[in-house]
Image (tube, rainbow, N blue to C red; front, side, top):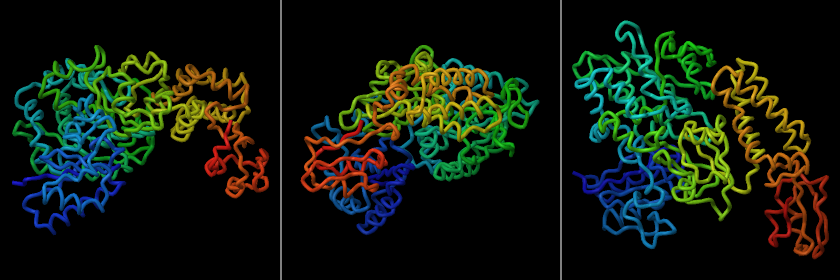
Length: 596
């Protein structure tokens, strides 16, 4: 029996910050101080507060250390674990708090969260099936196999109001019901979409890294509900930690008889295999994903027929994403009313978001549906750095849209986001401040879509390319007002005619920025200027003669020799030579250089 457990975040973010070395050093110091029988080091998944990583939490004291380095480890072991004295300089504190916290749950970041899909992330060892079982793991699977009929399972999911967390928000129970006919008479499949390709999204990756068994259990429950005996998890190869932990989890589940033949002695057979994706964004679309699993080029197929009728290997198939599955066991154990009591009328439960961009608390959050964007940004997210003003938030990645400041208090749910021209998407939420150019943002997402288009249909392959070319003209100061009309016309044509959902939603970032930030487009076209000072071709760096001291620092820093002037005299910038790198502005100690 250990007297203390040291939990170290082992998610991708903290790994990049050196958590593996921290774990190794902790074990070395614990052994050196003869504490092996008293202290256990546990590598967990993501705690969520990525901006403060690597995070180390000591239990039962519930002391959370932030931004820990390898050099801090000897002090933590000697002072805290050996002598019982907290290392105050490393304890995570919020600016609003006068003293250190007793638990991360006391912080503004966690206080308004409700962790269901993420409940085990940062809490258990994801590579230990025993720890998962110790938190009621596989109890839901046992319940459905021994106490419920397949139709009763589907009805519970229907009654819960759970909608797919992958983007479209289709009712999960309804999808399962469509695929449930002819149980035992035809081959069926259960698929998991772990091909998370949106820029700035890392929700599914974190669940797989922190709690892989929850997905296996949920897929087995889905298999029982629709009459399938085989599942596939399609995960991108760029997620090496998630892939390794999934492989470990599948192996353990098979050894424990929780995957394979005759699970719980009920005669139910179900197994799961992994398929690695090569990073094609289009394989996040369900039919393209299934085509890829089959060993073919990942391209979407026309619908109907829908996958529930003819999916993987032309057989009835259900496909849900990681977060959707992560909710299933808790719904089975706690009941549909429990889940439906959270959220809004048409959007039940919680939603996981990856907070990124211009935000203090970059990280992973899970909030009840209906939480306002303001609450997410200002309270959970800790606001915008340097006191800058909130300008917009991008949800749904390349398929979503921008939420402007005028909708800062909008409750986040599926229908509200669609009503203002955005969408939930898988859960990426990128915050932008006054220094972001919305034309440039639209161009960024469209460039991504052009690169990732599979090319199968002309509207997406050619249409998005033409849209990108127009945006490129505008950001270079070569656009016309007619171009804005063409841009909108192309966007609606692509929405109506592209083959798959990804192509149909590709114009959304452009349409939403045209809707809420048209004045910025007009400034680029008519005034030939970028109000945010982002688009290089429209920038001009100017030296204020009243502030210039003639120190020559800017001239010495300029890589293009575009600045001239004598010592202690006002300098000038030649706009024809200036490459607009900003080096002069960064080096000026008197604030004499500005851009417009």
